[in-house]
Image (cartoon, rainbow, N blue to C red):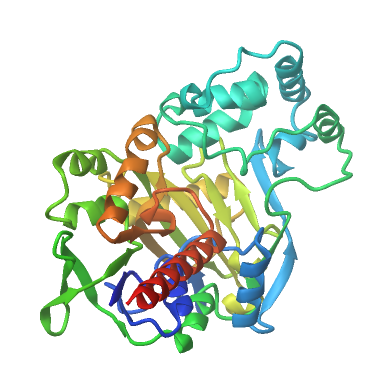
Length: 442
């Protein structure tokens, strides 16, 4: 028996691809999807922050398009940065046109210095995120966007973060592209998501829901509380029936790895201590419905400056008009915070409204029809030196005991919805091959 803990995309994909192998899925919430969920409130549909689909793997793209048969629409990205009281296109490093001339000059000279007077290269395991920014983009871009934005997001000094996660998200441009961007010349797109796909109705929730017809029974409202790894036995707390005990041959976990390790009662102390030292940031997801059409024509906006409490705002009704009422707008903002720090929702909403008014997105006379706050406890993993040092051994030890930890939080990484689906597929194929090999030997 294969036990799958968590019915988010990674867990659902694992179950979907296991085909006829025996498995059970356990989900602590009352519905599937994990953070890839949507909810309705007073005529508006909100996702748990922005969830946009962009693919690098043809087989996963084909699978999602098959599951969502005809329900996806493609969008040309309209993403911007708001700083120095002006909008510039994303990504910042190739779109400085429109900023004050002295800012553009600092960015250009700083970038040129990375080419003419490069810093001595550091080994990857010694290069901090801050060092990566300065080495690849220069002091001007660091000062005017990369450092303030990322310190607002990660809530730690960037010297504490490693740079092994960033290259696919923030590629280094060529000099001509930086110059073109300073002059306002556009001859190509940049970034990993110049286009994206999004469901025409229902929000991102339709993606996990599309897996469900092919996934056998899921035990909802059922939380993993304990694992005896030597005996391969898991204990769950069922919201209706109390405690249930399940034996397993393999356990697939998609819950945050610190939570998994804490529940494994017989792991070595050094593994438990290592897991307890992993760090992350939490995010307040503030969702608003506004009684005015098209408060913005953009998909999302980044805010690096400290006078705005949020690091990003997005506009769901620009992804799909069906996500709100006619004649209105919907938006979400994201405010990161340390996991054990809290701000009362009323205070958050005041800060958000003040920031949106300063940015000219919301007017003083705008009526807010819906205001809702979700606190996402595990939002973004911190890639620090401790993670780099302990995570590989932790994952190996778990796998040695028949536990496969996958997904963004299971592998403790910064990955996309596509990656979660792909990881589930690959693991299911591996487990099926092992089962067939065992059957052949028997």
